[in-house]
Image (cartoon, rainbow, N blue to C red):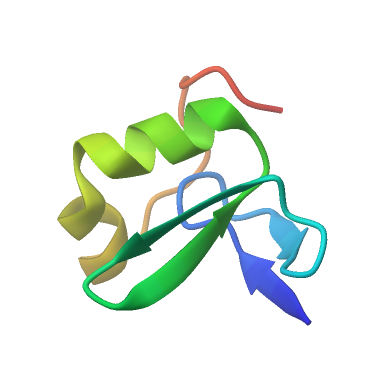
Amino acid sequence: MMAKDLVCEMDVDEKTAKYKTTYKGKTYYFCAPGCQKTFKANPEKYIGGSSGHKDHGCC
């Protein structure tokens, strides 16, 4: 099953994702450690709104 990296909006395979975190009981998947770190710094920004690809060190 594919998940959406909320930081850069890339598709990530949940079964093979190396970077993931749980927030408020839900698991979020990331394409790279930079996206995971960015999400962890401000998860509400990505859960509640649109993001777009930012300069955060991934991809």
